[in-house]
Length: 427
Image (cartoon, rainbow, N blue to C red; front, side, top):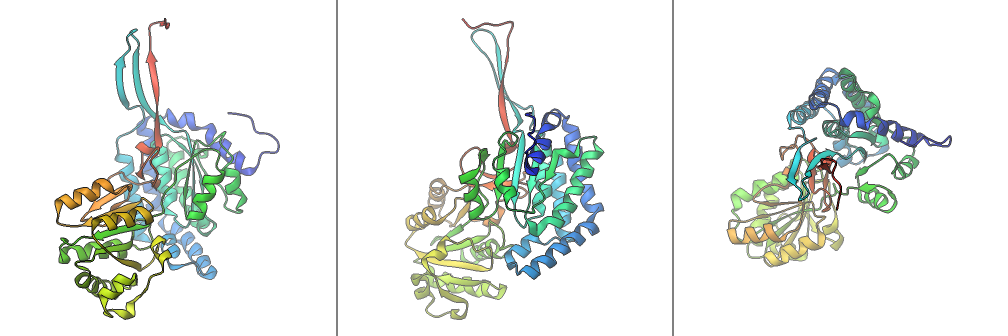
């Protein structure tokens, strides 16, 4: 590792310190890395009162600052959420170790044995906002996959993140691994983000988890590889063949189960042949749950005044909004082609689905809609590392390289070629 100059910023010092231990972690036995993650779960339960007190301080500050309901929900921890976080960590600990897995092996014509093996990426940096659970989720996945980690949470979560990081450090110490392997920047100034984006000497992969402004800033200024994602403008297309009674709970779950997250439903597209029947039922089912609606002109016409107190006319920009709240866009479309055209124009490539009992139509939708996760007759809320059986996730990538969808252990690895010869020389 390069020596630091006397003018090195505090951010550079932290990044260099984290990166200096990555070889030690990468070569730590799989059992030791798994034990760290399991101990993190134990620490979450043992320190529950301390963590919730810290989270209470953040919630109080958020209330004084007028934070939105969606962000407050993301920020809030309680006993059930902490238990869920601990369970996810235990699932990560129990997953097969990805490091050292041999992806292929063959013998070259000259006799050398060539193999391709999974290895850690190296040092990760994650920027995230208002999501304290990200601290332990990402730490678990990074450590299990042999990666050192720099965290930069938002100021709104600093007390929660500090308490959660203490759990990570206690777990590392329990396995005689240095706590410097996972460190957090103090989140005191925005300049830390700018400085972090310049640390390509130490950071191998940057993962920004936040709004469009943060993603755009990282895209424009980062000097290392960046994974983009986590912004979800998600759609369901209600086809003419969909079963009304069975489809309604899917739409409701996709919108209401947790509206402040990236895989929550934003726009319901309804085939024009069933719009007059379906839309009033959607409003009757979901308005009592607190949902309000914005509808295009065709949807308003199909409603013909029914549920008017819950519906307003949609502006065109409304179909490019990630609501993160109990608002649902309604649009009538002339069949599957118009539905897919709308998704192609307005989706962020996160999670989109079809509700249909027509298998040919369903298979066409699944083949042609180009999103990280595509659904038939299921809620978009399943796009999640835990729900996919991955234990947890560091982000939901909406790009194509190098990972797509929920990023877990395998997505935090790369590979290297190993050539075993017998004092071989190339002719």
